[in-house]
Length: 438
Ligand SMILES: Cc1ncc(COP(=O)(O)O)c(C=O)c1O
Image 1: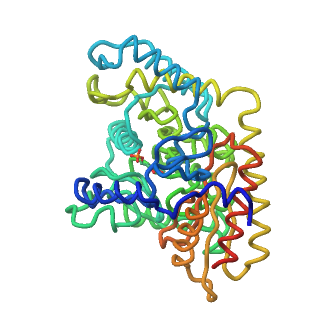
Image 2 (image 1 turned 90 degrees about the vertical axis):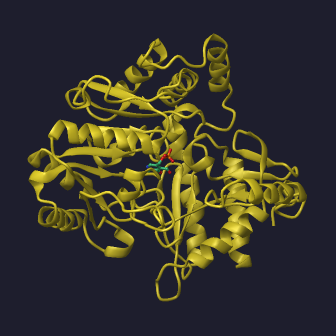
Image 3 (image 1 turned 135 degrees about the vertical axis):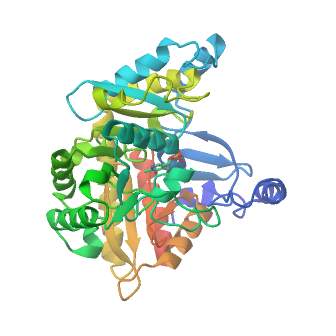
């Protein structure tokens, strides 16, 4: 039992004020918007959230990978405030401004691949995915989209069709869009295949069911996030890449969760020698201000006619100002090595816990500040109940964790990439207590 566990939590969880707001929420907010955790947040700083009852939580979620350089990132917030005083909106596709162009220039410099690149900015991750697919289809004049199981790409109508899980995202929402071909992913913990074997299996499926001449793009997360922090076996992405190049299929990397430093490299693709034609980014790009992008080969990015992309809030100037600051911090010396060190410390702690609870923790996996533990039953099957119980026990002790995995069997950890060693150790101690209590 750590001393900090006792002092961070001062009421029952949720506390009385959180419960009051939850009642209002039940009356006025759609039931379809359903918070995973029961506490309402009043303020946040660095890697700690404080709720409306004064309880503190070590944040191992970062709003699902958004506040990667800490909550209320001082310089990014200052840049956003300064920009807010100049102008908050003009609409880039009516009266443009330089910040948008500068964000695009910076993204061209840091995304994988040494070729001329262009970007289109938008507001959300799903919107970036929609844009990437429009661009790939327009460039190739083909329709098919190759995806893999366990993937998650958003909650808009097209992205519903790209997701693996139908429930709850598509439930009752009408027909899912067509021309989407979903093959089995590489999942080393579950399939025991080499990356090349898993890639050949997927390619054979797509060739049979879609026909290569019909495939516009392959859309893939280099490491799956919602799917349960699934790292593909070595050789998987490289083999898919070689096949796509041969067949003229545009490769789109969804780096919305994995990009911008999360894995200890600016892009997770870099760990695998993966060089996508287009990269979708969002989440961590602007310190919590809504901004997303597709960045890729200039000749592909120009495929749609003038006016074919953009929207009212796309590339909002306040978000762009914050993004420039965040990109500076990500590119600063030591930023990625800190993310690597964070990952090593978390992984070492998780492996110790796995050694203590080998029949419950089936797998520990991740890179940098993106980790997951897969919880299993005695027969090795997914153990969603343990994940739910551990998440609940952790929040009651002052640690915010995320669930994940197509069966809800994975505990996901996405702390800030600059979180302190002290907070990592405290979080791991709390997780240890929760496991002991289970
Ligand atoms: C890999 C991935 N793609 C797309 C999205 C959708 O992003 P957004 O929720 O901003 O639309 C998410 C969100 O969690 C994601 O993790």
